[in-house]
Image 1 (tube, rainbow, N blue to C red):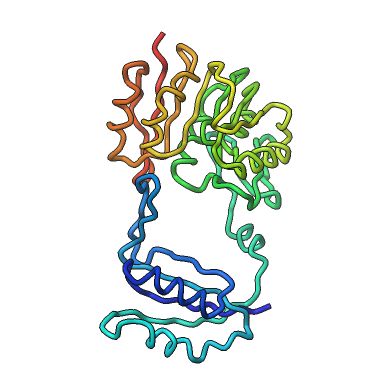
Image 2: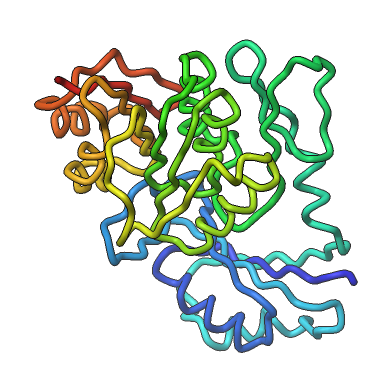
Length: 293
């Protein structure tokens, strides 16, 4: 059925109040998004910062009476404050279909592709990793994931054992297996990530070659290659856990960090690892290092 979408453009001070008021109007859901292209990459733990300019959006069914919405807000918001209201009517859509239509196949290395289950690659020799909308982050479109996939697609992985620390959708561990790795483990704090990784592994016919574990309890046997595509602060905080998983002379791939955070992360690992020059895409970076013997 059609929907109504009510959006308030406001600032970070008023956003929580508008969120509450939109809920009082009877919205089915409320979302807060960046109103001025001001990304928050890595907030401190246990904080929920907002952007300086915020769009607070409520979704209502088509029968909701929103004719008096503006007056409702005006009666409850200080008249000296600045905000604006937009009301849109949305056609009902199959949102998975919209995602599939916009997610085009992505090529890495010579002939490795990430695509949906509905896309086909003309080259019968191509190696395909198929993903559809799911529970966890990771489709290969984000620069940090793409940088890791490019490294995997251009390095020999035959018979390697892999650890994907912070596996998300499992895309990196699954890619490694499709490219020749022998076995992989996926580790994540999010139960949904573990479910998504198992589902995606089954879809790509590598379920028997991967095990997934909660980050509180996982096997610590060292691997040939360890990938950690998370964020700079966790990469540094989890140095002991991540570095222990890498065999002597093994490879470490670190991503999820911004360009200006390269030195910060490198310094945390350099006593036990030899780093190659960082690789960049947009404002993001990926680090490859070899563990000292």
